[in-house]
Image 1 (cartoon, rainbow, N blue to C red):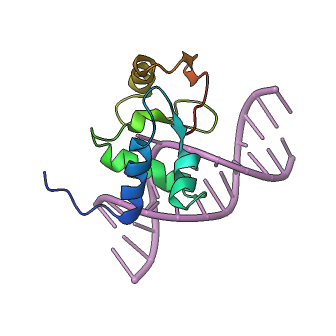
Image 2: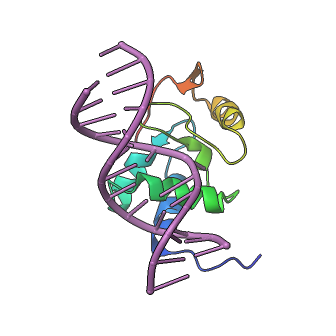
Image 3: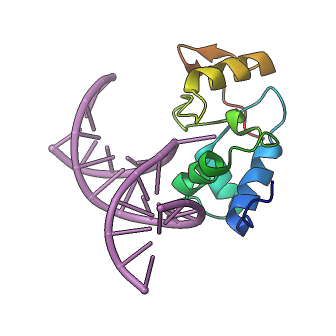
Amino acid sequence: MTRRTPSDFQQAVYLACAKIPKGKVSTYSAIAKAIGKPRAARAVGNALNKNRSPSVPCHRVVRSDLSIGGFARGSEAKAAMLRKEGVIIKNGKVSERCLF
DNA sequence: AGGGTGACCCGCT
DNA sequence: CAGCGGGCCACCC
């Protein structure tokens, strides 16, 4: 599965996602800020959407509104996954936002 | 090389 | 308080 060389930005996004402890969730803005681009929340989502690698817990990333946001596989699946991880979901939204 | 899209965010009405 | 529009960044065709 030789994929195209991921850009530095994308790599940073994946790394930041992997840095999220299990049972916790982060936000796109937080990731963007962590990589040095607080205004690149869109680019962050784009990187996950275009890649959505199984090695990257992209489902642990939610919107700043604590909402699940979107998911290439289905936002419902994302919420279910987070629930299994130990994250409390309320009405399709995260009860507590845990930022590392 | 340029245009369009997207898993977003913030501000205004 | 809620809803709508514009803006910002990166990737794909």
